[in-house]
Length: 438
Ligand SMILES: NC(=O)c1ccc[n+]([C@@H]2O[C@H](COP(=O)([O-])OP(=O)(O)OC[C@H]3O[C@@H](n4cnc5c(N)ncnc54)[C@H](O)[C@@H]3O)[C@@H](O)[C@H]2O)c1
Image 1 (cartoon, rainbow, N blue to C red):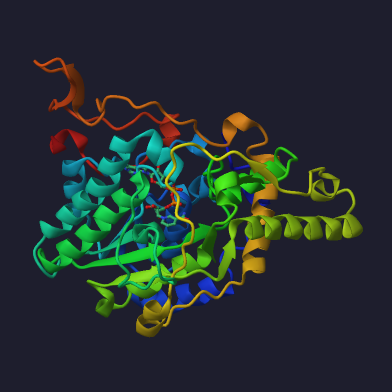
Image 2 (cartoon, protein in one colour):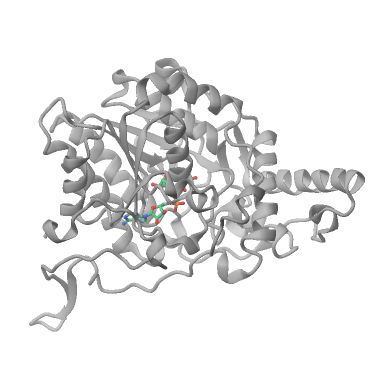
């Protein structure tokens, strides 16, 4: 898709006042610095890449999928032309070592996740565990291979799900870790290994355990509460869905621009190295209540539009102003209450969320109203279907039958090739010489 003709129409108030101030005060640290962001074509990674670029950093955006058909933040804002793009898999050890060792980075922000939702994780447990643990290890190894003093700070995007079901809330950073689900446990492994790489191997690491993040450009519309509700309302004219098993769930929510501010706070402060921080929410609320908040907000927003501009798309949009309770997805291990204490990050870096829930919701609803009108009005464009579990041939593995008749994956050394993208002009400008990496 050629986005150039619609770029001007993105209802984008980015950055809000709080993020703008953080970017300005972080310029002395990041101006001219080289930073690597894995998962940069995703939701949070896209916002971080944009903010680091605005702070004057030279951003290398790493992702396994830069297909323009994704319509991500980098595509819709034109930012992909401003950054160095590297299309590679974080599971590729040699590629990651070459990238980190040769990049001259001051910081590596590791946000790529093989599956970043629990539903996708359970559909591919092996792939999720490998990507979410070894992805971190491969990047941290790249840093370890450099001489001390030249090692970048590796900042790891962890999650509040590493704490699991706790007796006492809110979770502090000292709460016992207990993530059990596939996504939770795979993120937990890397979270623990971040400490190991710091203490045992001298790699500066920082861990940020994040609560639920919402905001524009989250395209995980099949699973995540906010983009799914927005799709229900703005594309399908339906009421948002509430899973039966979520009726008694409580979660923290933070606006994405505040999450990005937290990254700046922990990354620019050398005393944060070797530390773990919770990213607290601005809003702790039950799942039914957050859906009610969304329905009420969009309804009010729409009523105001009907008074001011009855011919606008929102004023004319028909949808069912209620919540639908639907059966839960089977086999999911979910945590009933997740609530983070933010004392440590506040005391040690001065960070606290600044965007109130309604302002965040306003920016979010504005974006999705536009997105489902102009970019993804049809189902096929919204998000990719789950891929069936496939042998890891791309990673140099081949499925074979062993002597005792069991299927196994055997490592087959072979030349790696970058994935095909839609056209020559959209091909990432990777500086990796893949032939030299095997
Ligand atoms: N969004 C949230 O609410 C939230 C909360 C807590 C923690 N996190 C963590 O923050 C990080 C970013 O989350 P997000 O919401 O932006 O996720 P996302 O799914 O929007 O983005 C993840 C990106 O990683 C890329 N990726 C996947 N596998 C890869 C691989 N093997 N190699 C290279 N790139 C790969 C994907 O293409 C995608 O662009 C994740 O690590 C997630 O676990 C997110």
